[in-house]
Amino acid sequence: MFISDELAQDYLSRGILLTFPGVGIAMGTWGFFWEVILLFAVFVLGRCQGALKASLFLVIGYIVSLLIFGVTSLNDLSFVPLAGILGIIGWQKGWPARVTFFWSAVLAGVLGALPTLAFVAQGFDADTSKVMIDATIQQYQASGLLEVMQQQGINEPQIRDLLQQGIEIYSLVIPSIFGIIAIIEFGFVFYIMRRWYKGEVKWVPFTHWRLPWYAVWGAVLGIASYLLGDQFSWPVLRGLGINLMVVYGALTLVLGLSAYIFLLQSPRIPRFLKWALILINFIYLMFSFVSIIMFGLFDLVFNFRRLPEES
Image (tube, rainbow, N blue to C red; front, side, top):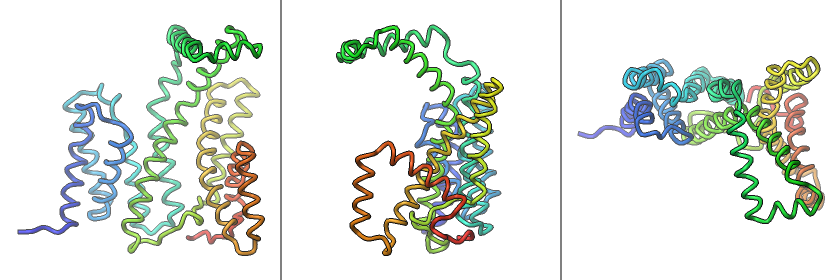
C-alpha cells in the first residue's frame, strides 16, 4: 500500500510539530535551523489541514515539552514558529503577499525579541564587561593592532573606554538583533514555500518586493521614540526607538535594493549611466549603503516603481 506525497508530508509535519520542541530542549539544538524546520512544518501542515490544525499540533508540542522538562525549559524554547500560523491565515484568506509577510514578520520579530528583554534590563555586569574588554585587548596585543593604534595616538585607556561603549550599545540593541534573525527565519521559509507552491499563489519577483505603505509608521515610531527618549532622558523609550530603527534599517535595505535593481532594469536609463551608477556604488560603498536604506524607506511612501497596492 502506498501513500501520496502530500499525505507523507502531512504525517511528517505533524510528527515534527509534536516532537521537535521537546527534542530541541533535550539535545540543546534550539537555534536558527531548528526554528526554520518548525516553520516549514507549520506551513506544510497548514496548507494541507488549515491554520487551526497546524497551531493545535504546534501548541501541543510546546505543552508536552514543558510538561516533560518543566517551566524552566521556557528559557530554551523559541516561539518564532507561531508566526507561521499568521502566514498560513493570510495565505488562505488571499491577503496580498506584502501584507501577509509584513504582519507575520512583525509577529516573528516580537516573538524573537521578547526573550531578550530581561537580559537588556539587567545588562552586562562590571565583571563580565571587564573580562570581555581584557580578552579583546589581549587579542589586539597578539595581532599587533594595539601597537598600531598607540602609534596613532590612541592609548589603552581610550581603547578600553571605546570597548565599554561598544558593549553598552551591543547590550541595548540585542532585541533588534534577535528580532532581525527571527524575521530572516520567517522570510526564508515564506520565500521557499511560495516558490514551492507558486502554481497556487501569485509569484512576486524580487524587483517587485514591497511592504504596505502603512509600514512606514513603524519607522516614524522608532524615530519619534528615540528623539523623545533622548530629550526627556527616558531610557526605555530611547531603547525602543533605537531597536526599531535597527530593524527598519535591515528591512529597508532589502526594499531599497529591490527598488534600485528595478530602476536599473528600466530601458529608459542608458546603459552607460547604469554602469556608472554601479561603479559609484562600489567606490562610495558606505554612502551607497545609507542611500539604499533611505531609498527603500521613502519608496514605502512614494512608491517610486508605481506598483499596484494589491499585488
